[in-house]
Length: 180
Ligand SMILES: Cc1cc2nc3c(=O)[nH]c(=O)nc-3n(C[C@H](O)[C@H](O)[C@H](O)COP(=O)(O)O)c2cc1C
Image (cartoon, rainbow, N blue to C red; front, side, top):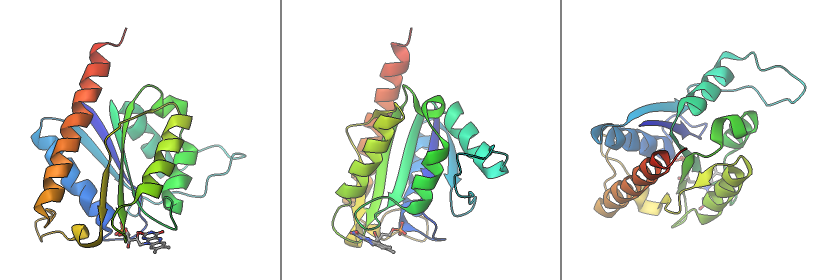
């Protein structure tokens, strides 16, 4: 099973990106193949509908999404919504990358939970014909602390991540099994 993980922050050591790295590690331990696409490390130009997409990072992002069986989108909560860089990245994509795929939304917020950004992400996923995973992951407040090894310090957050990833991968397997 091939999972694309999109880290949607424009900050070097973003907690949402640290969470993505932890998620990747857990998925690989479960036997999944993963590709982490970090929008800070691979910045994209502003989306312009008038222009052909020749940019190498844009093409790499679209390829990563298209090849995936399931997709994880992670954002920092900005003004009750998703980051500008993630919205810009998603504007390059559409049905070709998302149609019929299970998508898990993940957020990191200053407040206790980032429900607004998760809901906004799920709205975008629906519009590109992705299938929203009903479970989602939000870290907020002190849950945003990680050990030097990259593990969440909060044990309940670790449990929540593992439980949600199990749900997400089971959902992908069930949908793939029923594909005609
Ligand atoms: C421009 C901006 C807007 C923010 N808006 C919110 C917000 O609406 N709600 C919230 O809980 N936290 C808000 N925060 C705090 C971030 O969500 C919080 O620091 C988060 O952990 C950042 O994620 P990151 O570590 O992935 O960059 C905001 C931070 C910035 C820089």
